[in-house]
Image (cartoon, rainbow over all chains, first blue to last red; front, side, top):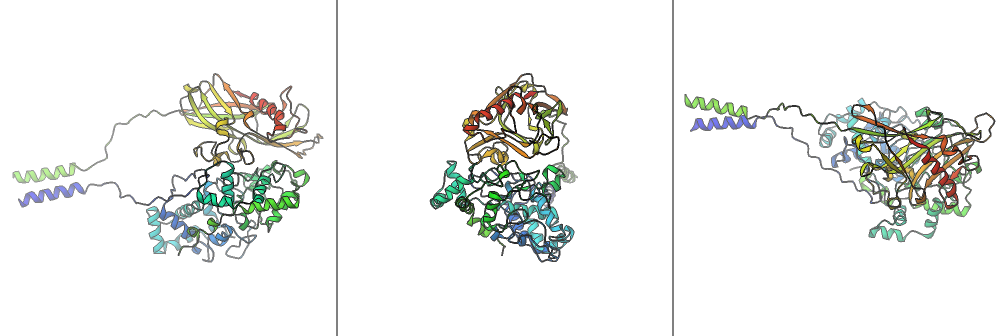
Length: 358
Length: 251
């Protein structure tokens, strides 16, 4: 009887010792909260959003170890209070050196196809890789950055939880931060309810309440913004995301110190063109333009009204360029400004999910 | 002895019961055809490139900086090649659609330039994320001031000085949309030429000079250089749209 038991034991042992598939990592999918009037975000197949991935990305976004002297993180040039842009005209790197462009806002990036003012990155993951190595930004090799992160046992655990490996590398860092950035959706401002109302889209009770607070002047500003003979702004700024995927020369200069998109494509017809930014949260994201030359919204409006400069690559969409701009009077400028202020999304700016984790 | 035999037999069964990688007989899976439709701008028998200068029949010069067409329902009867497409010459080149299909099903092809009335004014966030009509793909082909899609965008510059010196000082801009400008094209005997393994391509040629320079229906860009398809611009808009439709031919 004992022998029979031994035989059975050995048989069972051998049976269960057979190689099976590897244990899969259970990682809870992150449920993205997309506004009903937004298009569905396309998430890269190789970087699905997970709860642990997003949380890791958030931590890395505020991680100063990503800079050469541990002094700055992504958030230093992309502050939540500025809709994740920089209040300074030019951001400063670890050596105190300034760049030549204003930091772009980080909002609704998951819906965009080009990144940086010159569009040199075609994915968020690729975009994230660049500032760390840039000598006038975070100025650190990825090799060094990864060594610092790997030395932290908590990070090793968190990378394992997010990606099933503690073999940290730059790709995984970029993926985690990209996951976090994709969650940063701004879609609850006065503009959003005005947009939905205009398109006859259903509003929930919270949105209905917000809609009642929209003033006649704000509606008039919206009309003027969209008017061909008024602000004529809609060519480059429209839709639920309040921007279109374009590179444009908006008449800032007659000659170009910064070639913008042309510096990437080397095509003279792209000289002086820059990515059209979203206008969301524009009231808090100044200074404005790729080089932060305008401190205030009034200056921006004045530029489009009377400050347009003609150059060979000026956008045909600047229809009134030959008369210096759309020539708004003071009242109209005020209406446009009031409309621009409706694009502020307080919930986004103050969202606790986007701030420095405890 | 029997017990020992039984012992070894059980061990053998145990080992043999382990799952091993089976070497299955190869299954031949038929590779579906990949069909690519292209819109190929042409000038004087050659492929046109963005910013290439064209001399009009009236002698002035101009060039296109952007040609975009948003359309729907590429199909042969009930066989649908695609429910939407976007030709964005500057950004995407000539390709307008690449789909899996059987070329035999598409020996004839019809397509709309523009979006049918029933879809034109609907929420642009609703179409599938792969659809050209989804706002994230349509982008600037959707109007903010007039809920609806822009069907055709033609933008560029004109040299109005006509003195032989490059001075493209004048923009032209035609944003053609609105329901009355919706058009349908049909082509019989579509030629799908092999472009790779199980890949077939058909070209629709767009003769760019015909858009503004069609004999008898010329558009003088020095005078008529803008349209947003407003009511008072409809005569011009219709003329350009008709010229455009007539300038597209199958290869």
